[in-house]
Amino acid sequence: MKILTVVGARPQFIKAAMVSRAVARHNAAALPTAPPVVEEIVHTGQHYDHGMSQAFFDEMEIPGPAVNLGVGSGTHGETTAAMLRGLEAEIVARRPDWVLVYGDTNSTLAGALAAAKLHVPVAHVEAGLRSFNKRMPEEINRLVADHVSTLLFCPTRAAVENLASEGIADGVHAVGDVMYDAALAFGDLARQHSDVLDRLGLAPKGYALATCHRAENTDSGERLAAILDGLGRVAESVPVVLPLHPRTRERIERFGFAKRAERLRTVEPVSFLDMIRLEQEARAILTDSGGVQKEAYFHGVPCVTLRDETEWVETVEAGWNTLAGADADAIAQAARDASPGRPIADYGDGHAADKILSILLCPSSNPEEET
Ligand code: UD1
Ligand code: UDP
Image (cartoon, rainbow, N blue to C red):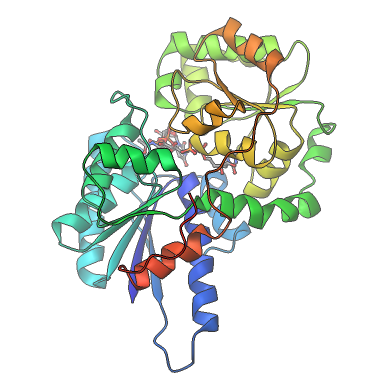
């Protein structure tokens, strides 16, 4: 069986790393006479800074991409079109049995569309997530990806229900969350190997960790100002560490918000192990990232989400996560009130990637499902 994996953006490298490891485990355990599972990774080049891309391949030992399309940055139309053209040629030349896409980025959209038009079956990891806000590019991307996918791997029960309400039931599998697999696989390694707390002079539980990169927050001067001011209010009582996504760094400069950001400990994007270490020891996490909201829960840290809605509704229902939007007062208040919640019965058992591979190998199978 040949899988063509399409990735392009930071969170996809992390998710894909777990499935690549499952492929390696499978091949190592298979009889020498059995044909190996072949995985070829196509990197669209959507993210390209070393700290947004290659650092993850190195640290997580992800097999190098067979090809990098080098698409880079641009408008949605420009980049998605370039990805489609490049991916179509790769799929035709490589003739995979499956095209595997992750999450909700433009690389996901392009991979799913290119494959579906070539009648190559698409498998979507992190299917069924919905914000019900079609102004988000991610919502359009996941709607399209889900509706052209043959296999839909859901991390939560809410995701399965969202698909059911859109009439999608065939090929839906509640396998758990590959991000939870990653949190378990790299949690202890981060504790042992990351010296980020020492490097940044931070005491365990003596700081808050923040990230912000969503288009809806960074393209609006009003929302970005309110978020920086809210984080600034939090910084009056505890240092706020903000690894800055390149998009946000650029917008802060463009809007002339450098002064607003001065109260925060802004740093370059950090490696995955450093990020996990920062998450593990944060007093609270403030973020508009999808992945980081869940990692807060995985590492037992309360979260404040800098958005008006979330796809990860179970984190809010269980009391781990508070939606504060882009409102400085609400952010400051939510950070003061942030406290642990109840256990969440989603995200699986840390073996989502193995289940995904089993189903790809035998799509009619139904390995014990977790969510
Ligand atoms: C993308 C995804 C978003 C995901 C995020 C993960 C889409 C529509 N959005 O958002 O869903 O949560 O990745 O991080 O696919 N830039 C650099 N260097 C890089 C990458 C980006 O400087 O290596 C800058 C460029 O100015 C670029 C901007 O960031 O224009 C935005 O990059 P882009 O990939 O379009 O969107 P993200 O905001 O990263
Ligand atoms: N992350 C990281 N370094 C950083 C910021 C984030 O390793 O400086 C990791 C984070 O731990 C999570 C993933 O990147 O696993 C989330 O990616 P991002 O927030 O860019 O995208 P989203 O999840 O919102 O799509």
